[in-house]
Amino acid sequence: MAAQFGRRLRKGATTTAVAAVAVAALSASQAPGVAPTATGGDARASEATPPTGSSATGNSPYYTDLPPLNSPNKPGASPPLPAVGEAEAGIPATVLGAYKQAEQTVAASNPGCRLPWQLLAAIGKVESGQARGGRVDADGTTFSPILGPVLNGVGFADISDTDGGAYDGDRTHDRAVGPMQFIPSTWATWGQDANGDGRKDPNNIHDAALAAAKYLCAGGRDLSVKEDLDRAILSYNRSREYLRTVLSWFEYYKRGTHEVPDGSGVLPVESSGSGSTTTPVTPAKPVTPTMPAAPATPTTPAVPVTPAKPTTPGTAPGQSPSPSVPGGSTGSPKPPPAKPEPGAPSPGPTTPTTPAKPSPPTPPPSATVFGIENAGGGRPTATAGEDFAELPKVRAKSRSGQSVVGADLVFELVSETDARFSGDRTSAVVRTGEGGVAVAPALKAGEQTGDFTIRVTVAGRALPRLDYTATVTPRQADALARTGDEELTASPSSEFAHAVEVKATFKGATATGAAVTATMVSAADDPDENTEGPYFKDAEGDPVRTLTELRTDADGMLVLPQIFSDDRSGTFLLRLTTEGGAVLILELQVAAPAAPAA
Image (cartoon, rainbow, N blue to C red; front, side, top):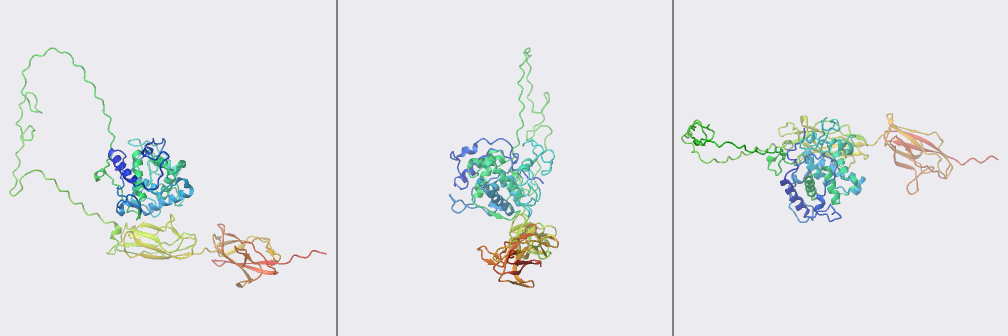
């Protein structure tokens, strides 16, 4: 379903005036974050002629709602302004995470851009109301596409189809797509795969936020410089009012914001009848020029005519007017007004009708949840670096025990672990579906083994939580084999000429990242460390005869560090073991070189 754009037209002096007041009020606090231009950074820099060329959105319409002037403040902001309610300054969790992730990514790849995530938040607010108040799934993809109007030249730009309808469903014209409102032709160049799912999806907030970040940084811009900041915003939508509106939200978010559950963000007002100051402006139809009157033709003086009796409007000449009727109309007289019934109030001046009180809003599904319970599934377990096959399933229920569909449940990793939900997140909001059941989003184990906790709560509710214990097991290998066949020999007090290389497998497949322990032993059936003979060296160069921090590479291969011999001769044993039960014993020969023949 397309987004609603009733409040997104960028015309009207009222909004411009309000935007100017908002920017002026916010700028008065001299909030940090944007450096002045070389010429002083006055208002004239923002009035420079916008650069020519295309824009990210095709100059598609946008929301013109402005932030309240009493914006949130960081500690020490001057002058102090009262903070607004949580809903006004809140940004949905997944959306906020996507903006901050994009900032970090660009900071690493293009530090000179100095992109602040609050700029992405400002554009996201203006373009889609933060993905319709955070209506995204656990992977950050909008539940339904956010589409701008058809760019067919009727009131908007005329952009013929460039994607075969792949993104916008229109094979004739393009439409702006997704929470950051990219037109398909721009997305083809700037689209990103920020969440690592192998797709560049403009309807995914992670992909769209990173694409917007890179687009704003194009051309070597430094967004801490006012002129570059203005140019970047105008390249997104070439409108002065757009620039002012985005700057208003940018300043607002720089004074502080916070995370709110997905789906609970404040949406811009959708229509002009809702009390907003901006009304959609319909372009005026061209006025047809009035033709000049033809000059009068001279005529023969007319014979004087006896003036006719005045007629009542609507009466043909020569007719007698009908009796007048109260109200000024003609024709058959209207019947006299009916007498009021006994006891009825006498007619008088019309009294304005008191508008009916609006019905109380229906509480959101999450507000009707009384508790949550396990809905099945085994204990979540995965090998290090692998995806969890079993994921928690949770059912939300009402006080009467009925399933609650549409409730938001928060899945969170609360103990020491490097496992992560998709999108590299430690928490995610999932909406209950059929049967009131929500399944945890895709979860991948890290390299840290052991147990950790997946906690489930109801978003915005202080209800009993549900904890699941998840386990990450070490990577395993059930077979080890040496790849070379050279004899492992050395002279006393020297080093072995050939390195030891082995390959690990598990159930016949390559064992990537399998932990291997190497120990010098005195007997094949004795795992205890030998205190003499060949050895490895630690970081300080001291002899060690057991190594435990060894792992196979992506091909299951492992090359052991250099092996040295002491002054003892003989046959020694090297024992290699893995998680999963693999054992490999190798012989190490230390012998003095043979004396030359006489």
